[in-house]
Image (cartoon, rainbow, N blue to C red; front, side, top):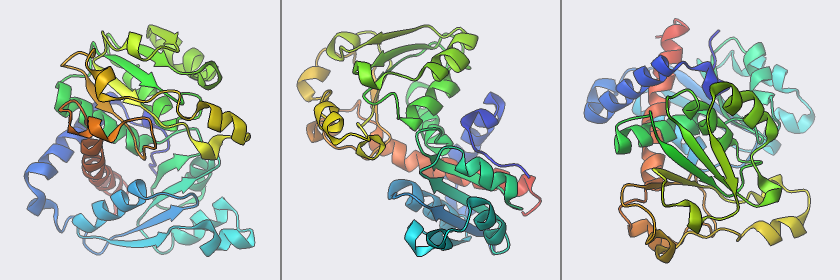
Length: 307
């Protein structure tokens, strides 16, 4: 049974096909309004979420399907001690496809190994968030019209930022990708990403603590929040949370061609005044995420013989 746990589960050709489908949905929504009629999606969210859960639910509804939702772990049998494996086996009896978010790395993989329907990882701890990366990729494609030869600056929490890890891996497969990694020393990109993903692909990267001095050559600035929920020490979080704040003033030195992305939610790391800048693309990412999730749901249901 085909599932998507990591963005690397999808080839670059498959990603391009998903983009073609997503853009067709954007242009011809009525043609897809009944594509998943009488099909059901389960959203199993063991971790708080607004955008991702609602995006999956909106995607399924706009395909004409139905949604069974679990938005809090304490409202499920997990509160009684049920394992992820047993939950996946049980829920598979009710639905055609599952989207799952969980605070523990590897939980979505365990679910996919036990479910009898496709599983989409909607975020597992600090590990992966493939559908956010799909939203990111559609944003880049529609704004830049290319994936090759782009310089991307990742700024903020690169250690725990699963969206950063996923997008870095996805972009490492395209020719000419360069990365600028902007973070405090304590929140640098993990070594396993550098050694296992960037190095084998030959992706050049620089590490710095300087945001303003790094923007001149960027095609994309990908801001992230410092995630309180990933910290064991409240003092460390408070010390680092406002380290990088993107303002209109700082953007004055950035190239006009550069776009600003953010997986959301934001806290203080992007001033609301930046929202009016034409380079700000983070709310477009939200919309594009829905279309890419629609495309992925269609792909997995077709491959599973459920459409």
